[in-house]
Amino acid sequence: MTDIDKLARAGGAVLVLAGILYIAAPFIPETQGLNRIGTTNWLVESYLGTLHHFLLPFGLFALFAVQREPAGLPGLIAFVAATLGNALAAAVDVVWLTVLPVMAASPEGQAALICLPFYEPATEAARGFIAAACEGWDFAVLGIWNGAAWFVLLLGSITLGLVIMRAQVLRPWSGLLLVIGWLGMLAGVVAPVPEAVAGAAYAVVGAAYAWCGVEVWGKARAE
Image (cartoon, rainbow, N blue to C red; front, side, top):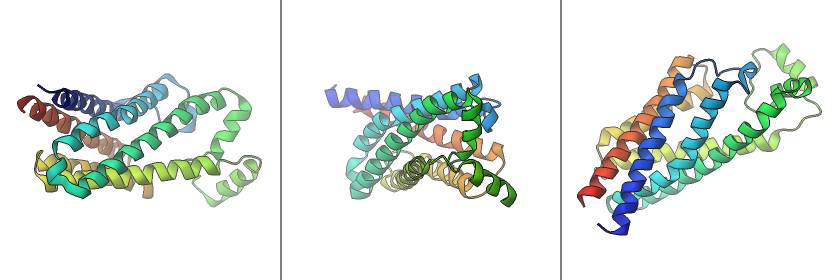
Protein backbone atom coordinates (compact mmCIF):
# COMPACT_ATOMS: atom_id res chain seq x y z
CA MET A 1 0.00 0.00 0.00
CA THR A 2 1.41 3.39 -1.02
CA ASP A 3 1.55 6.49 1.16
CA ILE A 4 -1.23 8.02 -1.00
CA ASP A 5 -3.45 5.01 -0.30
CA LYS A 6 -2.76 5.35 3.42
CA LEU A 7 -3.62 9.05 3.31
CA ALA A 8 -6.82 8.29 1.41
CA ARG A 9 -7.84 5.69 4.00
CA ALA A 10 -7.07 8.11 6.83
CA GLY A 11 -9.07 10.79 5.04
CA GLY A 12 -12.00 8.41 4.70
CA ALA A 13 -11.90 7.67 8.42
CA VAL A 14 -11.79 11.41 9.21
CA LEU A 15 -14.77 11.96 6.88
CA VAL A 16 -16.75 9.32 8.81
CA LEU A 17 -15.91 11.00 12.12
CA ALA A 18 -16.84 14.45 10.81
CA GLY A 19 -20.16 13.11 9.56
CA ILE A 20 -20.96 11.44 12.89
CA LEU A 21 -20.32 14.73 14.72
CA TYR A 22 -22.90 16.47 12.53
CA ILE A 23 -25.42 13.66 13.06
CA ALA A 24 -25.08 13.95 16.85
CA ALA A 25 -25.24 17.75 17.15
CA PRO A 26 -29.01 18.22 16.50
CA PHE A 27 -29.92 15.71 19.21
CA ILE A 28 -28.38 17.76 22.02
CA PRO A 29 -31.42 19.22 23.85
CA GLU A 30 -32.03 22.80 24.98
CA THR A 31 -29.40 24.63 22.91
CA GLN A 32 -31.49 27.20 21.02
CA GLY A 33 -32.06 30.76 22.18
CA LEU A 34 -29.87 33.53 23.55
CA ASN A 35 -30.53 32.39 27.11
CA ARG A 36 -28.85 29.05 26.32
CA ILE A 37 -25.50 30.56 25.35
CA GLY A 38 -22.73 29.32 27.63
CA THR A 39 -24.72 26.41 29.04
CA THR A 40 -23.23 22.91 28.99
CA ASN A 41 -25.53 21.68 26.23
CA TRP A 42 -24.84 24.76 24.10
CA LEU A 43 -21.09 24.26 24.51
CA VAL A 44 -21.29 20.56 23.61
CA GLU A 45 -23.28 21.26 20.45
CA SER A 46 -20.97 24.14 19.51
CA TYR A 47 -17.84 22.06 20.00
CA LEU A 48 -19.29 19.24 17.89
CA GLY A 49 -20.01 21.65 15.03
CA THR A 50 -16.62 23.34 15.32
CA LEU A 51 -14.75 20.03 15.32
CA HIS A 52 -16.80 18.92 12.30
CA HIS A 53 -15.71 21.99 10.32
CA PHE A 54 -12.06 21.53 11.34
CA LEU A 55 -11.97 17.83 10.38
CA LEU A 56 -14.02 17.90 7.19
CA PRO A 57 -11.39 19.52 4.89
CA PHE A 58 -9.03 16.56 5.53
CA GLY A 59 -11.82 14.16 4.60
CA LEU A 60 -12.75 16.22 1.55
CA PHE A 61 -9.18 15.85 0.28
CA ALA A 62 -9.58 12.06 0.27
CA LEU A 63 -13.03 12.38 -1.31
CA PHE A 64 -11.56 14.52 -4.09
CA ALA A 65 -8.64 12.13 -4.60
CA VAL A 66 -10.74 9.01 -5.25
CA GLN A 67 -12.92 10.70 -7.88
CA ARG A 68 -10.62 13.38 -9.29
CA GLU A 69 -10.52 12.02 -12.87
CA PRO A 70 -14.25 11.45 -13.54
CA ALA A 71 -15.19 14.54 -11.50
CA GLY A 72 -12.94 16.77 -13.60
CA LEU A 73 -12.93 20.56 -13.22
CA PRO A 74 -16.37 20.71 -11.49
CA GLY A 75 -15.00 18.32 -8.86
CA LEU A 76 -11.99 20.55 -8.26
CA ILE A 77 -14.18 23.66 -7.96
CA ALA A 78 -16.53 21.88 -5.54
CA PHE A 79 -13.59 20.64 -3.45
CA VAL A 80 -11.99 24.10 -3.21
CA ALA A 81 -15.29 25.84 -2.39
CA ALA A 82 -16.37 23.27 0.21
CA THR A 83 -12.92 23.29 1.84
CA LEU A 84 -12.78 27.09 1.94
CA GLY A 85 -16.35 27.26 3.27
CA ASN A 86 -15.56 24.85 6.09
CA ALA A 87 -12.39 26.76 6.99
CA LEU A 88 -14.35 30.03 7.18
CA ALA A 89 -17.16 28.37 9.17
CA ALA A 90 -14.63 26.89 11.62
CA ALA A 91 -13.17 30.35 12.19
CA VAL A 92 -16.66 31.78 12.84
CA ASP A 93 -17.36 28.93 15.27
CA VAL A 94 -14.18 29.69 17.21
CA VAL A 95 -15.26 33.33 17.55
CA TRP A 96 -18.71 32.28 18.79
CA LEU A 97 -17.19 29.79 21.25
CA THR A 98 -14.75 32.29 22.72
CA VAL A 99 -16.76 35.51 22.61
CA LEU A 100 -20.39 34.57 23.22
CA PRO A 101 -19.96 32.78 26.61
CA VAL A 102 -17.92 35.75 27.90
CA MET A 103 -20.67 38.15 26.82
CA ALA A 104 -23.34 35.94 28.38
CA ALA A 105 -21.51 35.96 31.73
CA SER A 106 -22.07 39.69 32.42
CA PRO A 107 -25.24 41.84 32.43
CA GLU A 108 -23.74 44.30 29.93
CA GLY A 109 -22.72 41.48 27.62
CA GLN A 110 -26.13 39.81 27.88
CA ALA A 111 -27.77 43.05 26.75
CA ALA A 112 -25.43 43.19 23.74
CA LEU A 113 -26.19 39.62 22.63
CA ILE A 114 -29.33 40.82 20.85
CA CYS A 115 -27.06 42.94 18.62
CA LEU A 116 -25.31 39.92 17.12
CA PRO A 117 -25.85 39.30 13.38
CA PHE A 118 -27.72 36.03 13.79
CA TYR A 119 -30.38 37.48 16.12
CA GLU A 120 -33.73 38.03 14.38
CA PRO A 121 -36.33 40.05 16.34
CA ALA A 122 -39.91 38.97 15.77
CA THR A 123 -41.67 42.32 15.40
CA GLU A 124 -41.10 45.78 13.97
CA ALA A 125 -41.44 47.21 17.49
CA ALA A 126 -38.68 44.90 18.69
CA ARG A 127 -36.47 45.97 15.80
CA GLY A 128 -36.83 49.61 16.83
CA PHE A 129 -35.99 48.81 20.44
CA ILE A 130 -32.97 46.73 19.44
CA ALA A 131 -31.70 49.39 17.02
CA ALA A 132 -31.68 51.91 19.86
CA ALA A 133 -30.08 49.48 22.34
CA CYS A 134 -27.35 48.46 19.89
CA GLU A 135 -26.41 51.95 18.76
CA GLY A 136 -23.00 51.67 20.41
CA TRP A 137 -22.24 48.17 19.07
CA ASP A 138 -21.03 47.35 15.58
CA PHE A 139 -20.99 43.68 14.58
CA ALA A 140 -21.11 44.37 10.82
CA VAL A 141 -17.78 42.63 10.16
CA LEU A 142 -18.95 39.50 11.96
CA GLY A 143 -22.19 39.57 9.99
CA ILE A 144 -20.37 39.80 6.65
CA TRP A 145 -17.90 37.11 7.68
CA ASN A 146 -20.64 34.77 8.85
CA GLY A 147 -22.72 35.33 5.72
CA ALA A 148 -19.76 34.81 3.38
CA ALA A 149 -18.73 31.63 5.19
CA TRP A 150 -22.16 30.05 4.91
CA PHE A 151 -22.66 31.17 1.30
CA VAL A 152 -19.38 29.59 0.16
CA LEU A 153 -20.01 26.49 2.29
CA LEU A 154 -23.54 26.08 0.95
CA LEU A 155 -22.50 26.57 -2.68
CA GLY A 156 -19.48 24.27 -2.42
CA SER A 157 -21.34 21.52 -0.56
CA ILE A 158 -24.31 21.42 -2.94
CA THR A 159 -21.93 21.40 -5.92
CA LEU A 160 -19.98 18.60 -4.25
CA GLY A 161 -23.15 16.53 -3.93
CA LEU A 162 -23.94 17.05 -7.61
CA VAL A 163 -20.37 16.08 -8.56
CA ILE A 164 -20.64 12.85 -6.53
CA MET A 165 -23.86 11.98 -8.37
CA ARG A 166 -22.29 12.78 -11.75
CA ALA A 167 -18.91 11.06 -11.23
CA GLN A 168 -20.50 7.69 -10.28
CA VAL A 169 -17.40 6.68 -8.28
CA LEU A 170 -19.33 6.63 -5.01
CA ARG A 171 -22.97 5.68 -4.68
CA PRO A 172 -25.01 8.53 -6.24
CA TRP A 173 -27.55 8.58 -3.43
CA SER A 174 -24.85 9.77 -1.02
CA GLY A 175 -24.45 12.87 -3.21
CA LEU A 176 -28.24 13.24 -3.37
CA LEU A 177 -28.44 13.15 0.45
CA LEU A 178 -25.80 15.85 0.61
CA VAL A 179 -27.80 18.09 -1.74
CA ILE A 180 -31.08 17.45 0.10
CA GLY A 181 -29.51 18.12 3.50
CA TRP A 182 -27.92 21.40 2.45
CA LEU A 183 -31.09 22.57 0.74
CA GLY A 184 -32.86 21.84 4.03
CA MET A 185 -30.31 24.01 5.85
CA LEU A 186 -30.86 26.76 3.29
CA ALA A 187 -34.60 26.56 3.93
CA GLY A 188 -33.91 27.04 7.63
CA VAL A 189 -31.96 30.22 6.89
CA VAL A 190 -34.37 31.90 4.46
CA ALA A 191 -37.66 30.79 6.04
CA PRO A 192 -38.93 29.83 9.50
CA VAL A 193 -38.98 26.04 9.72
CA PRO A 194 -39.62 23.75 12.70
CA GLU A 195 -36.56 23.00 14.80
CA ALA A 196 -36.99 19.28 14.08
CA VAL A 197 -36.74 19.92 10.32
CA ALA A 198 -33.54 21.96 10.73
CA GLY A 199 -32.07 19.24 12.94
CA ALA A 200 -32.99 16.58 10.40
CA ALA A 201 -31.15 18.54 7.68
CA TYR A 202 -27.95 18.49 9.76
CA ALA A 203 -28.34 14.78 10.42
CA VAL A 204 -28.86 14.05 6.69
CA VAL A 205 -25.69 15.98 5.79
CA GLY A 206 -23.76 14.15 8.50
CA ALA A 207 -25.02 10.76 7.29
CA ALA A 208 -24.04 11.62 3.70
CA TYR A 209 -20.49 12.56 4.72
CA ALA A 210 -20.15 9.51 6.96
CA TRP A 211 -21.21 7.14 4.18
CA CYS A 212 -18.90 8.85 1.69
CA GLY A 213 -16.09 8.28 4.19
CA VAL A 214 -16.92 4.59 4.44
CA GLU A 215 -16.78 4.26 0.66
CA VAL A 216 -13.57 6.27 0.34
CA TRP A 217 -11.91 4.12 3.00
CA GLY A 218 -13.08 0.93 1.26
CA LYS A 219 -11.89 2.02 -2.18
CA ALA A 220 -8.48 3.07 -0.89
CA ARG A 221 -8.13 -0.28 0.85
CA ALA A 222 -9.15 -2.22 -2.27
CA GLU A 223 -6.73 -0.32 -4.49
